[in-house]
Image 1 (tube, rainbow, N blue to C red):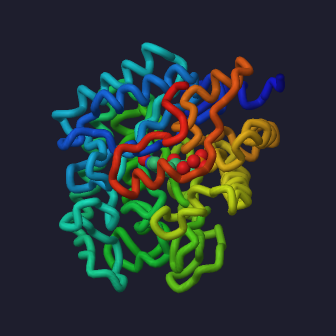
Image 2 (image 1 turned 180 degrees about the horizontal axis):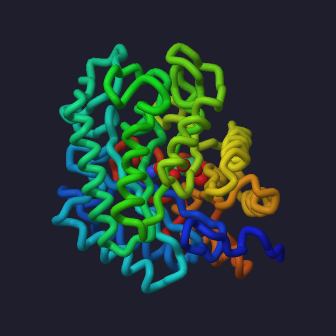
Length: 374
Ligand SMILES: Cc1cc2nc3c(=O)[nH]c(=O)nc-3n(C[C@H](O)[C@H](O)[C@H](O)COP(=O)(O)O)c2cc1C
């Protein structure tokens, strides 16, 4: 049995120490009740993950308001639901008090499930309304309120979701040519997210803060290009943005790629394009090389299936990544780390896209091949 020495080594994340390098990436399960409150299914998912002994558990995207939801049954944070999120954190910690729990906060922007609430950051050919400056400031305030609520739950940290085509990702793009403080140059495009980091570090210093980004989106004028009319990858702009985020207090970056509604294979490589995982590895490596003093999480390891653990171990050893993220694999087998450690056979994700299809159809998400926890 291979011992995966690096993958199973402890590693610091800000002021905490993760027991290993495994990260259960955020996976929206679309199982909240009609008010966005967590249900039995949500509790079960996180308890299963806690039994899996992940170094870090990322709690799926939670909307900062009812309007900001991407899914019909997405989670929503409010003063009425915060006690339930607290109970989820307590349930995780009761099973494994070493795991680091990071809660992802989101505004779905143009991907809000309710068409009436869809908003976009900058002008394009769609009929979706552009956010006014006042509306954007209100969203900034709602994010701050959400951070303050999470600070009460016992979670170790927050993830300000700025990836996969959601609102704050859109804001970072070169295509964001707004003429207020939220658009234009790097500083303005990262103004909102940097302000949130400064707010969290000042008022809730016990929280670990960071963000999930799409390093390259594969779209014209998207993140990872260098102008509004460019498709060719050039990471220098994103590195400038990340530098502003790190100066504002980001303690980790969770590196992802793509916009699932437009370039899904980039976000979630499948068998026919499993090679795209190497782009993720390069994005993580590039980030780590530039920002050696913060933790860097890599994504999309599920696509390497039964080769993923060896690859992950190698990348930790070479310091290409500090932490290794598994998304779909955490649905196929929430017990992945503990099984790998004990040499128990693992249910490898088959890359069938069943979970993604359920999400697209706004149905409750689960692995369609394996029963949870089997
Ligand atoms: C059903 C489903 C739900 C997802 N929900 C989220 C989410 O809430 N937040 C997020 O940042 N990424 C989300 N993702 C993306 C995954 O976290 C991950 O980046 C992607 O699946 C690629 O990694 P993998 O190859 O390990 O699965 C989701 C993916 C799937 C398939």
